[in-house]
Image 1 (tube, rainbow, N blue to C red):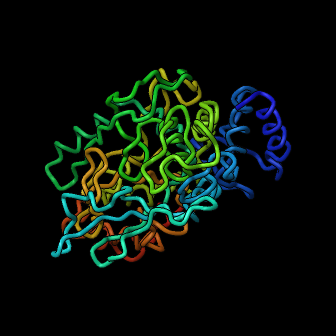
Image 2 (tube, rainbow, N blue to C red):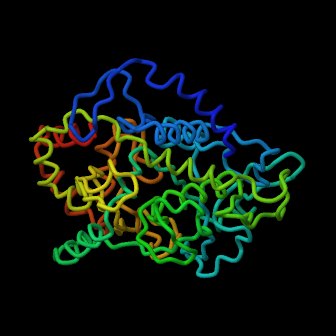
Length: 409
């Protein structure tokens, strides 16, 4: 982003920061919720440079892109906030499709989906069609993915690789059904000229952390991927339009956004705080959470790297309530799609960050309450089936206490 535009953006959003005048306590302290707490607040006590980057990224996150700025030629939504309102989940969703054989199983050969497995129905002016399901929809499975929340993502990026590998090894030694595994992915973007957080080149093998199947490892890669995949906005990190019926036809020659835009969006997500939690010191709810072994996968905290480039998130306990590993959730969660090492029934353990802001649960939003989400983990071929049975065996009062604890995260 050019300095002049950046200054205008910062001035516009700084004027309304913290307008409710409420205190901004550290979420790691386990404080009680205060009025006005919402999902798009920065970490406390940012120095002026980081705060400026947060404010500029915040404005870009809400910005609606237009055709003259390179939107399209096909796309899902025109702004990040359209899929992550208040940095949460929705209202936008992503629909995926997979071609089935006559027995209802995904075909090995998916070449019939000429433009890929993602439905991108929107087009810019003058184009007649986006990417939609084939006319013979009876042979296509269409599934929904709700976009993950974005608050607290800096904590996730900061977690040491060794921590994730440690939890993977501990689960492999358990001797029961719980045995999560790392999704080893590659850095897909071009090398980022901003090397504050890494100097990866295309093809670097890394631990996936972001996305519903942990298919992305870093927040700059995540930002570049979302700009291109959801909005059709190319960047120096992702300079080529995705396959689509219209080739490179958009209304802006060359790449659409600069690396500064990608990195400001990444920094915005890095600097988003975890929404303040109620009842974090609820000893009974926490004990029941552990008794059901929910914490085996929804690990309450993981340690961050002492070398993480944003010092306040370095060498701390990150309260993410996830192991960031893939788990086989069984046939009820089968979407027919693979992402790197993730199979069609494997999903990354969802971080329970800001869960109380959500109105639906699981990767596709099928659960409308926390208790329903717990119950739906219990398919007979799901790794979580034994934990769900422990939950079912509890008294009504204990089940309610566990749900109350989780609902407050």
